[in-house]
Length: 176
Ligand code: 5GP
Ligand code: MG
Image (tube, rainbow, N blue to C red; front, side):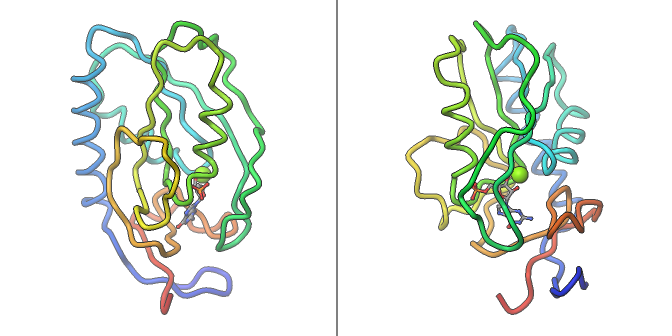
């Protein structure tokens, strides 16, 4: 499979990804039962993950989105800025961040800082994909869908220079 100037190969099928999401949704429904958490999806990458998660999350909740910028091409620049913020008041809320993927943790670090000092009741991270060998931050990630090697992936919401988000399966960079 080719996107722009790079070749990718199939790594995980939609069925494999979605069974991991269903599991996480079940866990979240249990953990947050009796509360009304505010889920905050991190755009653009989380759109497939979030949509699938709420097919299975079966308790009262609210859903909002933020948008950050960090990646240019295949490697993280480490530069993260907030492009879109939550309009809801987060004070006293149980906040659950929905990330497509945690790699170096730069974006996550930015999110943690962004939501600090806002009198949030609880703050947890849920990520669909996780690269354990790349993550060196101390911040604990409460919900992890699928562990990946430290290679570049596309599909299921994740892009290569904005291409490939629409792909139903996950692809990994060839010869990486
Ligand atoms: P971090 O800041 O943890 O290095 O990376 C977080 C963000 O970088 C993710 O939200 C995602 O947008 C992007 N990212 C990290 N790894 C990958 C990858 O393998 N493929 C794609 N397409 N994006 C990635
Ligand atoms: Mg992202």
